[in-house]
Image 1 (tube, rainbow, N blue to C red):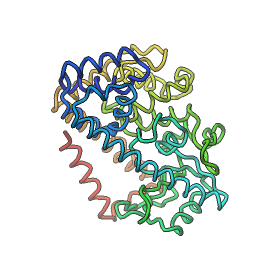
Image 2: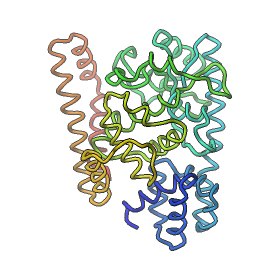
Image 3: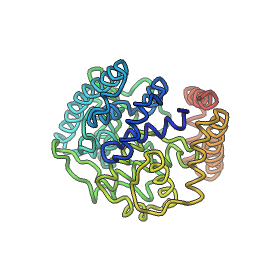
Image 4: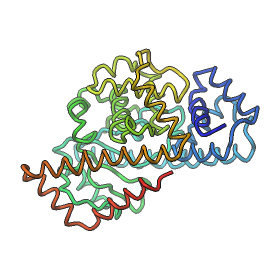
Length: 373
């Protein structure tokens, strides 16, 4: 089983609860000893889906087919994720109660929102990162001040050189006695994407989670939109064909709760959405929508995805080209051109050029791009 086949095998592992054909395929591959378990562990760990796969194996009975050592390892990772998420739920409750006491009622985004909204069969499925909350723009500074007064601090790694009023979210806040970093958002996504996903849209359809008062979560339709923006636009998945299986899995679960065909037509980058759905269906080996997706763009993206696995130099060159276009052309040149006629942009450029950490961050980022495997 090569890397490409392993990727497709893992995708099918994530759907065995609803797709009987995929369940039979996964069981057959394991029984016939076709799986390179060492590569399996590395891949699933890199994509942060190890606990989710364990839950699928356990609930379907496939865990009994696994080598004992592998079973114990997967179970241990799941147990750690379950315990951590229990503590994170307590931290989320604490944050929401703290803000609600000051008449601020946040919207929980991404993993935190999914966890509170029972998207997952088991709270141990999702490896959680930061706690992302969205507040109204006129509550932004007050929410940060409340968190800071409670003991949260700007994390050392969060050197920022811009006015916090123009950042998507306040610099990440950590607490010496809490488990996760806190991100307080004034915007749900980067500003350039707010033309088709913004505060006003969100506030019209937010809903209350069952188990936590004083807070809100996104409706499922908006969860799909933010999943697409994060995976395909912000992280350039539509260009690089490098896609997080955690994002793919979240979209799969959302497709079980909402009609994706009624969502994508309302999005401005409709073609990119259709291509994303095509990719997800290919990776999971199951349908998530009924839209027509057999386009040249979709096939080209999937080909690039496979080439990334088959040829390491293609992956590296593809990544470098994507990053060069994104940073040098879309960021550096555009910003410098805008600085010619915009006083605010000139101030933005000068602030960055006067701070050594900005140069270090750029050098480190480019080094990661050129040395990534």
